[in-house]
Length: 257
Image 1 (cartoon, helix red, strand yellow):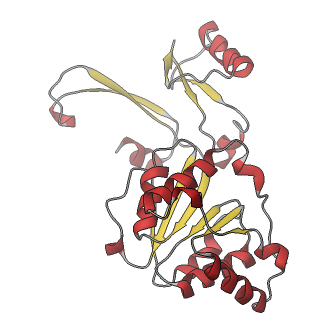
Image 2 (cartoon, one colour):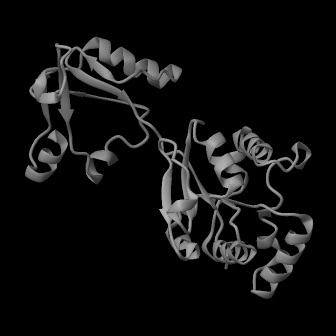
């Protein structure tokens, strides 16, 4: 509510101390301080490249305390990442860099297994797409759900730095997604399927005008075939490949011409 009020009214940042009582549906006693800030593009530009940010609480004047300066020095020189908190009247918190964005196309058995394995891993932002809300289980925290009658129409909104895993219920839809993604650009693209399916797809994608070098950027099959075809085994193989050092940068962003 405090955040919505600040956005609606505008104005300066504010810090409010609130009792943990009936007004907040609390009965434990004590109090909490709520800091409300608006971060627009200009303000965000001011912390570009930072790993830890510190600023005085509203109404706090004076130079940066030595304790805060030491935290920033440790962050700069040693890679230290403090937990968020108030230090001598200054708010200090780590900056979370945007995670690798992985789009999972399909909420069938393999899609569910992939999300269950990948969702707890740090540094990943999962976008999960299917044609019907009924195909999804309860979503893990942080997973973005997209529902579209025509999933291919969502390709245009994907960042070209995103990684994609295509495993829908339909070979025709899989082919459409590969075709659209090749034309759009991506960091990495994996397709579930057998050698026979991949040979057929290579031929069809070439007929649609894609160069062999571009088609070869698609990984098929995904995961580690030696682990077997059980959905969880596929998911474990995919997760292992994603978490290997350098995996995020192996396939550079490239747009088909």
